[in-house]
Image 1 (tube, one colour):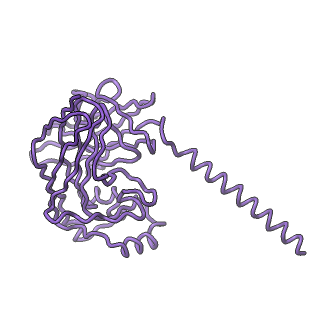
Image 2 (cartoon, rainbow, N blue to C red):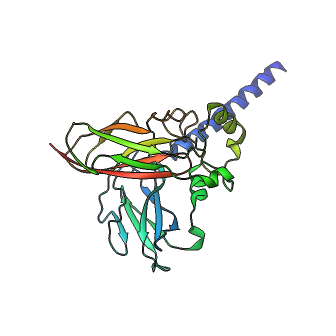
Image 3 (cartoon, helix red, strand yellow):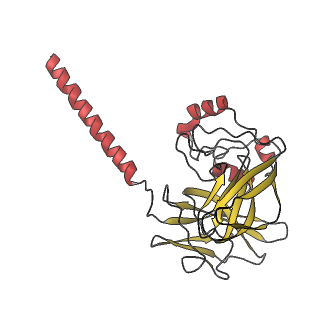
Length: 305
């Protein structure tokens, strides 16, 4: 009897190990560090006070590490009309939502605006229209980015206003390779949504994480700079909070399980330096995010040898 029990236990363990290996292998097969394509995404549209419309775009970089650079041209363009609509040419890892907007005129009608990307030999397109079911408001943004649960809102969340961002200094700078450029940004916010505390974060994730149908994000104000366009690499000091959905434990990302919002500076001014590896023209993209909503700023840097 004892011998049979041992045999059954060993058999069960072997089956469990085999299933675990199959599961891990399947997960690894769907996870790539490099070599994959970038999927452009139409996130929705919203009306502007002057009668125009803003079409909102993001992307899914299928790679966890590779950050492709694709200049505006045959492999990165909009149609119809101008190929350059302010889209990024540098693509951060994984899912990046509501990265930029393209303004179309009031008489746009039912036409499509198409963003075409070809990365690592794979061409993908995002089709943007003004169909009513793509209309986006602040609650949709907060929900889609994970600040709110899907289909939920509150008087506080509906009252939230996006942060304001004021870059101190010129919008165009000059520097040399290896020479740090100082970036100072005043960020003001209404304090909504309230910053999540560690106890609340743990409780929410323990109780509700299995039932979420959207990504989970920790609410808290941060300011982050990233390369948007440019020929070389850019390093930032201090290291910046990730604006892409890095869900890995201990990643410096609001979507990471153990991430805590940084303490904002007392005067509201965030100081960062950017250092460049190659000469050329760069665009740096700064995003202030309160958890639910965001505001962007851009600085152009001309880098020489």
